[in-house]
Image 1 (cartoon, rainbow over the protein chains, first blue to last red):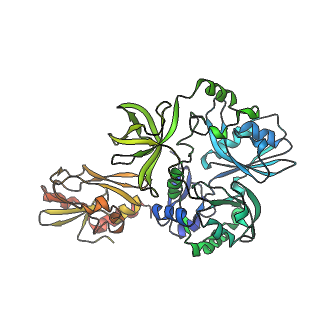
Image 2 (cartoon, rainbow over the protein chains, first blue to last red; image 1 turned 135 degrees about the vertical axis):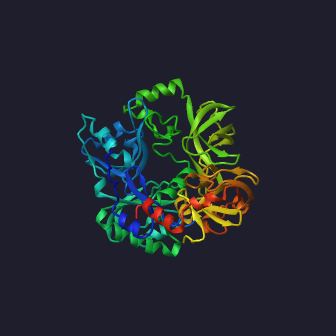
Image 3 (cartoon, chains in turn green, brown; image 1 turned 90 degrees about the horizontal axis):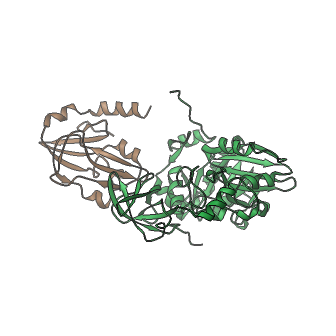
Length: 368
Length: 129
């Protein structure tokens, strides 16, 4: 089998030099952890953490009909998006399954411009999916090479970031963004994240990666900032009940099944997947995503089978220890009539059924 | 890092023999690879274990890994601390984080285990350095 070299971000050498443990993450060699997942997780919950998430992809759609095209390929209502605001959304196939879950940023008006942040391993597929739609006066560009993306997350994220930008970051609304500078480098600063904490995701040219990375780490030192890897990113998003492509969502799952009906605006007009979703809304879904916590001793992990009264009934999409709650939690798909909080289930852990109970998500909600 | 008076396996266990009793644990390399340990499952005292067979497991935040018995015999003591303080495995895998003591039934098996030098060579190859 030919060996495909792993892709790396502009900060790869820095991660290695700083002692990060690197792993293959969907074809990218990325930091799994620096000091340890638990320590990094705690830093984000209690202080601030810095993540290199440059493996994420970026797609720009611009031109006179960019808004119409973006609305046609996504589930959320792009026409209702104000300039310099972002929205969580999805790209669907005609059959209603996920191509990807994405963030849509409206960065320009007249002519309209949209900036999509998409999952790393889906970026080429997403680009093809959008670019294959004809009949709109709009240009679609895969521009991932133009951006380093860093996530600064945690209750002290705004304090740390404020030292390296003139933008009054506390005034930026949740899911708002502005183009300004970070460490004197032009950057898009968005109040978004994937951890369940307050925080920011910033986008800027890769050649300045070390400068910006180091400036934020220096500024954050007084608040206890820690460089974080994808291990903590996963435990943080799991506690926050956020979906991960390839786990909770994929081509055979629809937004209604994944509990993401709120990003589907069926009344906005035609979009790819709408007919299938309308049909599913009429017929009703048969399975649904629900949270669980282990009551027996063990950790229900990704892909483990779920039993109800001894019968195979579903599967775990993501599961693991919750460092904040000190419980073992996870998400699973169950028949819709069983996907309610309080249902006794069993997770088959290495051949042994272990007791668990379904609970509402998110598992963790920050105190605002 | 890897004391010469211990014996090692390719599954990253270590063995310290004293008389006919072997103290067993996982190596420092193994705990680093696992990351933060959250659960340690050990066999009960009096369990008969066999060389190369699964005798327990270690779960970290990321994954679960089997622990193979490096020797055959009977478990005579387990490290109860690991049930309540699994992080001991990260802090001191080759010391306070020992797992079980086994009364050897085939003492000659120990001679087939890796020396410290061989083990260090093995992990250097495995980690690609």
